[in-house]
Amino acid sequence: REGDLQARVAAVAAGMTRPMEAASDAALLREVKLDLASALLARHRVRLRTGCDAIDECLGGGFPVRGITEIAGESSAGKTQLALQLLFQAQLPLAHGGLQGGALFLHTEGGDAPVERLRQIGAAFAERWTSLGATCDRL
Image 1 (spheres, rainbow, N blue to C red):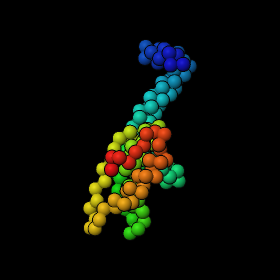
Image 2: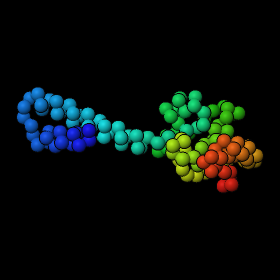
Image 3: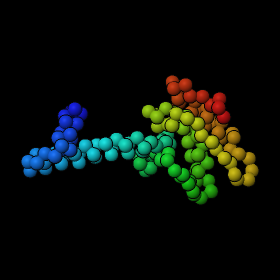
Image 4: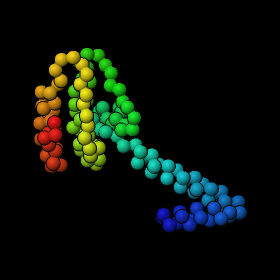
């Protein structure tokens, strides 16, 4: 079908003049442009999944990775828990909702950083994703 589309787009570009063919080809050209735009958007719409399907659905598939996302809420609402979970999710392959990379957690509140909770989440994460070579060695 791709060769078909290219040939028809080339014909439109060459200036076909018959009204029915021109209208049909103009519609096809719009379809091709939409397909290309969709492909480009899909490439730039990578999202980091949270590991919770319900949250990911609310977020349109996870957190967008281009830009900055602020997580705000009441004390004990789970902001730190979510941030720690995302640290591990980022390590997963793209096919599993990750970013195939690493992440950095900056703790700016007074008191101790949530190191123990990070270890707990890391152990559960490594157990769940052992088949992908997940580890919590990089903590």
